[in-house]
Every structure is written in C-alpha cells, then in structure tokens.
Length: 599
Image 1 (tube, one colour):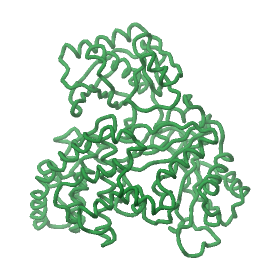
Image 2 (cartoon, helix red, strand yellow):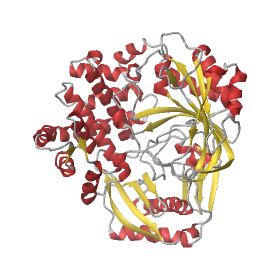
Image 3 (cartoon, one colour):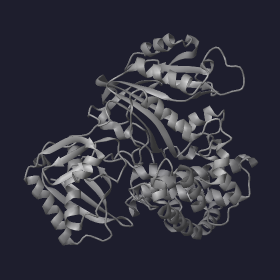
Image 4 (tube, one colour):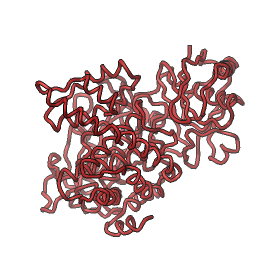
C-alpha cells in the first residue's frame, strides 16, 4: 500500500476495509456462512450483462435449490449498474459498487431479520437510535400493508413517529416470475440540525442505509402473486453509502474508496476537487468509470473494450472518462495511472485485480491511445455540424457516423449535444446501428431487465448442454481449455472458452459428435456436495476459476463431465435432444465463442 493511501486512511472514523469486515463478521457470528463474491458477469442469465445486486447470483437458491453453504449466507458482492450512468457525477451514484448482503433461505424471517438489522446498526456500528427511522410497506391492490414489520420495529423500541408506511416499499423481479415481497428500510438523519420528532421519508436529509426484502410472495405473472413456499430474507446494504454515513460525509467520493483516486486525478490535472462543480463532476466521473472498467476487465471472463456486449460498456466507460480528463486539463494518457491506484487500493480484497494488473493496464493504454487519435477530429466534426442544425434534434445518421468513424459512443454524443442544448434521436441511432452491427440491445441500453424470472425447462437443458460442450472441447483441444462465460436463453446457448485459434471444421465436427454421443448414451446426472479440495481431487472443473465457499455443488454426467456449478440441470442427458453448433468465432483476444442449439 502506497504512503498516500496509507496516510489518507488515517483521517476516517472507519475505513471501507473495517466496515466491510464488521458487516461480514457480525452476520457470520450469527450463523451466516461467508460466501465469496461472484464474478461481475452473470452465469447463464441473458437478461442482464452484469451482476447488479448481491442476490442475483443466488437466484436458484432463493427459488428453493439447496445452497452448499446452508440456509444463512453473507458476503460483499461486486456489482455493476449502467442503467443510470447519466447520474454518475453527483455525490452518490456509481457504476461499480459493493453490495453487502445477508440472506435467509427459508429459515428465519421478519422478526429475526429486523432484530439483527437493528443490532448491527446500533450495537455494532454505534449509530444513534435517536437519528434512526424506518419505512415499511404501505400496501396496494396486490398485497396488504406490512403491519407485522411496523409492530416489530415498535417492540424494539422505535417510536411510531419514526416508522412510516410507504407504498413503494416493495421489491419484485422485472420478469414474469420469481420471489418478491415487501421491504423495510432504515434511514439515518444526515444533517447538523436538530433531528425532527417525526420522520418524513420525502426529506432528503433522511438517508436510506439499507434494505431488508421480506420475500413472502412469488410473482407468477404480470400483476399476479401467490404466497411463497419458501420465505426468504434478502438484505442489501450499499458499502459506499453506509461508509459515507459512518464518516459523517454527504459525498461518497470523499470516502477512502475514492479519495486516493481523486488525489491522483488532482495531481494529473493540476486542479483541485473543490475548485468548481464542473471540475468536481468530471473527477467523479473519471474515478467511477476507471474503477468500474478496471473491475470488469480484471474479471476472469477476460472482457476487453469492444463494440459488443460487456466490452461495449467498458469502451463507453473508458472513453467518457478520457473526455472528462481532457475537459479538466489532462493532456497526456492517464487512465492506466488512475487504474493502478484503484488496483492498489482494492487488490487486498479482490485478488484478481493484482493477478490481471498488467493486462488491465495495457488495455487502458491501448484504448486511450486509440481514442485520443480520433477524439479531437471527431469534436471538430461535431462542432461543425452543430452550426448547421435546424431545430433542436441531432440527426441520427450523424450520431452513428461519429460512432462508426470516430468511436464516439452515442452516450458521449448525447452528452455533448445536451451541453449545446440539443436532443439526440436515440431510436434513430439504434436503427442505424442495427444495419451495421450485431450489438446487443442490452449493452446499448445498459439496463438490468430481469434476473429473477425463473428458469424455463429449455434454459435448464441449454445450461446442462454447456457442461457436455466444455468437456468435449477439453477432449478435442486439450485440458488448457477453460470456460470464460456463457449466455443462455430458451432458444440457444452462447459459450466462451479460452483458446487461441479458430477451430477447424474437423474440430467442430468432433466436438459436436462427442456431445451428441453423450446425449444418446443417456448419462444420469448426479449432484454431490463436497469441499473445494475434494472436488479438485475428483477432477471437477470450476467455472471462471472463481473462488468458492467451503462447500460446493459438483454435478457429474456419468463418468464424462464433472463440474462445480450451482445448477439447475436435467436428470439425464437423453432429455437434451440433438446438439448443433451454429457458429464458432472470436470473442476477444485468446477467447473463442460457440453458438449452438438443441433440436
């Protein structure tokens, strides 16, 4: 750890490392198994490009599958959200963030969850009871108001003036199905003035510092709910926000999670963070975007800047950071230097940052060099075209040309246009884009659209088929082949794996034939729980090289495939039908991609 980072940490009442550990230790002492953070890229969930919440990797277990860690779990999960990227630049929004979370999978419920939340906030963290207030679900046409939670807060000793019913206190998946229910949220008074006797949820001085989702229902269709067979607790507590509250700060970027990065940007630009609101906004965007891109590119899936999927998001983040660097006077390439600070700060917690440091820094340098060459030329074209515009809308073809020729993500052109008082025809741009690129719409919109929609039978079949595909690839190409990612729908599978060369037609045919042979053999699929060490001894393959908890699930398909995986799977390979490879192509450097279907 550098002297700068070490010296900065002395100025805080509590550091991010201490707070993260306090949360995990508190719930571990109450019977919760500590589980590692999953990859920032979801496994087998086509509804979203990134993990956007701590519960997302636990979907199968919230739906009733048995977790090898038991029924009480706790962790700090790496998350990426790009749906509100335009809000980044204020005091509280982030693209990458850490979600502290604990879960009860059908064991304890409201009483225990509320008691533990209160004890953690007041006894473990020492927050003043007089500054706490709570919201509970106020009811709507689909569900009754949550009187039980209201009464539980009262029994703990919270004055009824500090508990408010709010209709919005309800969480559900945006898809067609999955666990859902009311939630209760603690708030803390973050103003130097006297705490009012009565809690007003609309008063922004009351800051939300966590959320207990009380999953007592199951969504079975749009506007349709039934009582859940397994009632879960899903707590989500944003580390960045809670850290700011604990240190009496109203700006997340002044915590130790960002301040060393801000100090580096100040040194590079010759400007101070507090110099002006414009400078402050640009420094927040740079620190947030470089940190987020660092974590995405350090992931085991080997994501790099590109024009598709997660790679497109990385490119968008890096190029927006570069532009804001130029706006505050940074003339030379700088993103790798900023990334290095983020890596140094966080690699003790997330080892993959140090393990992949050289690759990540190199990708920043290459992307910045590439974009810098065209940035000034593109800005000249933009400024020239602005003078010709009649009305207040930017031509969608021009927006696409700036993207195609000068590498301007449409969001960058939109931002530039807004500064000049113009609107951008987003739909027109997307229509133009579709004509030239096979870009995932979710990558463009960057929004979380699901994640708890439930697993269909076809999706489960495709997930099972990826196990056979990986085993066949390792048989044909060698044991050096590792899974780098997958995207599965009910219609097809997409599978990324480590390999440096294009597969020959003969190799593709061999892989396809092996998979179909194993399907026809009707191999039974067996699931066992064991330690990671035992799984390795038995030759089980791990996904992404992830770190796992003490116990893992291992799925075996006859004596052919053995993988560490969360599931679910079919019972026998004969259920899969006929496997057919549609396409084999490059995904990124050293990573190939197979698209296949089951007929």
